[in-house]
Length: 178
Image (cartoon, rainbow, N blue to C red):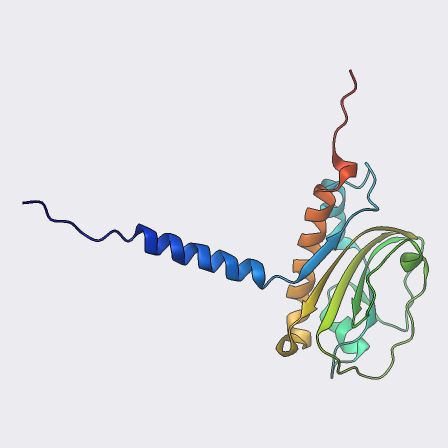
């Protein structure tokens, strides 16, 4: 007599598929690396990012620009303008528009204004090589995650997304001529 044991593989497969779908659906981030050149390699920027100064623009609800600058490693206070000719990261909290061209990096940070309470709030990270925009990544910030303790983790996530965007940009494709 042959006994059978119910297979758990279909249940496990269904659980894994559902979990993956939830993860993908919960990811509201975009990366734009259309401005990259052949010199903008992942190797170059991955090694440069930890030492780049960070310009902070905007603010989170109930968190001032100065508090944001304190929470972000290598951030410049708003009263100390970034060197527009040097490579740097720009963290922009609450802006309605994503970086669209080099004018974003060439422009000085606007003066911080009063706290904002709009939701959903966007957090944008841009990589500027002087006045040239290299890449950007943008993510919606959940209402419960708008405190300074979450900022370093959120920015690290945006840095990783940006490096993936640079790696997958058309400028990184090797062209072999015959």
